[in-house]
Length: 146
Image (cartoon, rainbow, N blue to C red; front, side, top):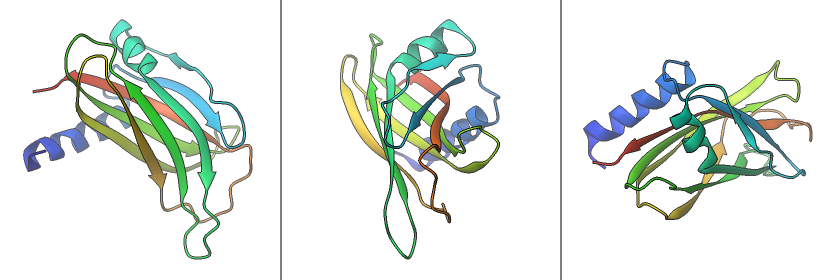
């Protein structure tokens, strides 16, 4: 991916987190529980893109140095064209009052009908998370790949 495209993807990811894009969706996945489906707050295209993304259970490594939290993200391109995805995830308390960290998941050039799996990492979590903590899908953006 070129530097310009990388910067553009990062800027678009931040825009989605801030709610600037009309493609937000939300849902949860809790450590030790089954993955949850997601509800889309705006737009038909956002709904279709959110259906392409499945977020698994979170896992916190038992490291004395940095207790990294990871979660598997599976994206299936249901569109008829090669697409790029930006999925913004947040790690939150069960009641949503505390946001521990956010992270983007970026997929570039996923062919129509294909599936890919990524591991999202929350690396700055400095506390042992309660089992009720959740990963929330803040937004999903799917654009036609160039």
